[in-house]
Image 1 (cartoon, one colour):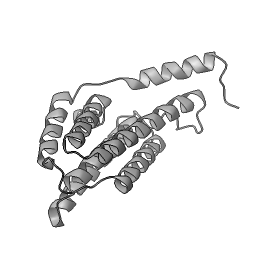
Image 2: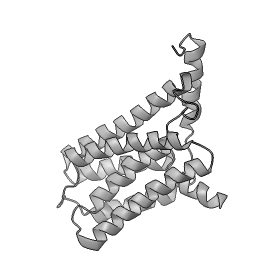
Image 3: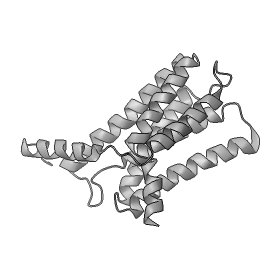
Image 4: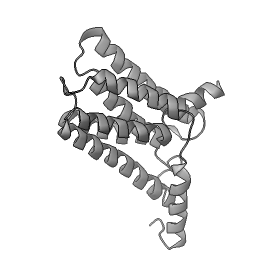
Length: 194
């Protein structure tokens, strides 16, 4: 069970999600969807930035006993896998559209639940991650996606995304250590809860 949870949670690591963001941005540019590429970059930046700022703020001054670090795996997975599902289903209807959206929801939910079951985050930290990621995804969906009839087949993006996930799955970027160091430095520099 533990190995399955670790394998699932690794799909939400920055080592997988950052390359997925990059290849999606590249695909949007090559498909001549400049506006969509801009919104993809903006919402990814917002999602990562908001998560990082809240991580540092909550390390310095936790607002609740079980809230020290919003789940970055959950926030960015919500945006990335949700955004990829919107792109992949832009030209689909019926059961295929529903199946892809259900798979994305299951992946996001599985990553979120794995964070709690692996004792990496509390439920409230996962909920905060879901809120951040959902806010970014809602902006993306409202301002940009989906765009049918792109200049490049969406199947190309799906194939490259699958290859990126296979290539980078199991690798880890330890951003949490960096955020903790910033929080500790801020505390030693005089920043404290008021």
